[in-house]
Image 1 (cartoon, rainbow, N blue to C red):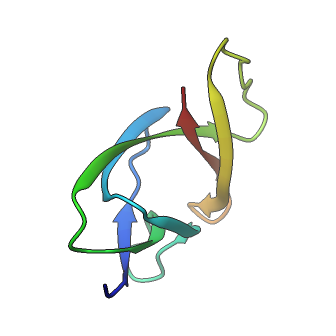
Image 2 (cartoon, rainbow, N blue to C red):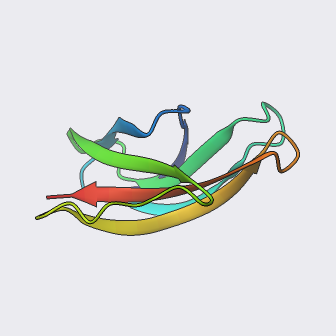
Length: 94
């Protein structure tokens, strides 16, 4: 089964979801140099069925609440608008 790397543009929302093939591995988060938008690069098995995965975005200095029963895994950090906003993305699981 072949793998490939897909790029997903991330929205500027506190919580968002992405439809990603199962068994995928997140590789990197950074600002795309062409579009200047924050993106997540993910190693995927393109033929696998897709699943909904949950993400959260926190700006530097913003509180991260310890929601009961919610687990977060740090994915990466990016700078946007020449460093005017620094975003930290976590994948959320319950």
